[in-house]
Amino acid sequence: MNLHEECLLRYLKKPDELSYSTEILKLNNYILEKRFLIKNFVAKSYAINYTDEIK
Image (cartoon, rainbow, N blue to C red):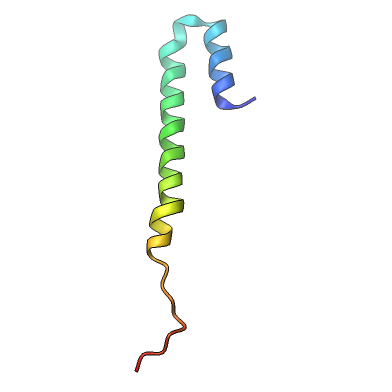
């Protein structure tokens, strides 16, 4: 069961905790977004080729 399913199940069991479940999902999405950006953009922008000779 993934995080979204767990939050939905939690909401169905305890509807008064919707704001808590929503905050968990927002935080999880934020972490995934930052991880994606770091992995795909930041890490690739610093790829330096050290095999070229300087003359």
